[in-house]
Image 1 (cartoon, rainbow, N blue to C red):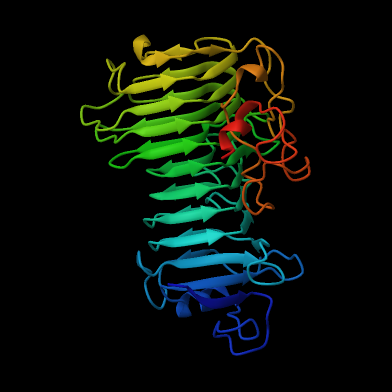
Image 2: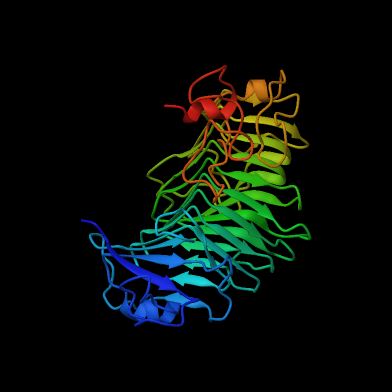
Length: 382
């Protein structure tokens, strides 16, 4: 079933304001909410590159017809022609409380103690979005419950007990996470809270250049249903990956931590066991590459369940922006198939790019699958 086209243009001052065409587009998000129905795709236009700052924070929880698994609602940005891949620039909080909603191509930037992007509706998806909050917040810039964040760039402020991303029972896939230049202190870049549902973090870069705090923390209770932490790149943190609580008795799926690159950290993969103090199992840890670790590469995890430890003796990166892998022996040359892939997080790209120049992607290939493969990029070639 094709979704029905509807339109939003916050810079429009004429027309019928009913969303049925570009000429009659809804003129505010509130107007949009009162008219949108499950089964609609709303094309959201950015006018002359201007960010929408004249409205209030948007809590989307009362559409005209509630979305369902068979009739979702999608919001998609554009600049000239619907579907052109342009970004919709929103200058307030966007909070989705409905189930089965997807946003694509949203550039959300504001500064407050509230996360710029929030959702607690089941089945929520944020795809190819740019999310920024440069005011410290315990909920970070992006706070998602029971949803997925895919191919997104996320920046927050770590001052005090700030975070950048909070995921409750969700998925963080092929994203780029960093902090504002002035950040100091902070709790962690990414916090996962896991209970009752499986969680995953894959293909994500945590760039700790601006503040040395914890990279990713996983907090879970006795109902943890497992997690997949795979092909991530984590740079310049204290504890790169920390499991705070050990593993409870109701665990039904193992926690898999595989194919990650960790460079310059105090501890690599740490099971701090603050609640379940005797737990050392519940984990399978495999094929992770670590270097420049000042304390412990692995801590409080059954050694027989840790396989294929890769110790890096040289920095593996060409740069510390895109974290492209180099060919140095003991560095990037040891990281084949590991870490995050090439610029999936870049919201200016339509999908993942493997073959273009550095303006749009990494330079390891002149065509997909060609030339000498190296590093994480080979794991994304089909």
